[in-house]
Amino acid sequence: MSETPIPYAGHHDGPMRVLHLHTRRGIVAKAGVTVGIDGAHYHQRWGRAAFEIPADKPVHVAVSQGGGQVGVAATVLTSEQPSELEYRGPAALYLAGTIGAPGTVKQRGCLLQLAIFALAPLIALTLVIVISILLTR
Image (cartoon, rainbow, N blue to C red; front, side, top):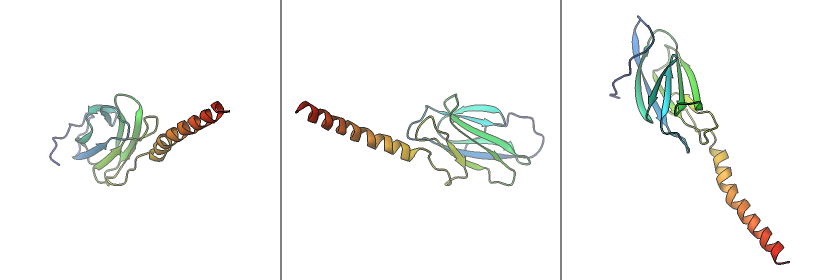
């Protein structure tokens, strides 16, 4: 990855490394994400971003959608862990997102959204049938 890393906003005199973060939209998503690195917030587009972080201490990483508390997911990245994370937005904006090592995060709420989208037409069809039966009596 060749992104120029966003400089670390906190005070740190020790060694640094680069966190590569890949953000992926959920089924329903806000326009962008807000990434928090040790309390400093950065508004980003969906996709890949790089952040300079301390190499010798734990770093708190949080991601939410838009500028608010939608789809929030957070983790503490220790100096022993690889500096690559993936965020996946939820299927519904009232659910939390997921963050973790690339390839390990799953989208929350897919079954719920499938149930909602599948049941709505079924309920509508049932109502039409019931109403038509009642009207023919």
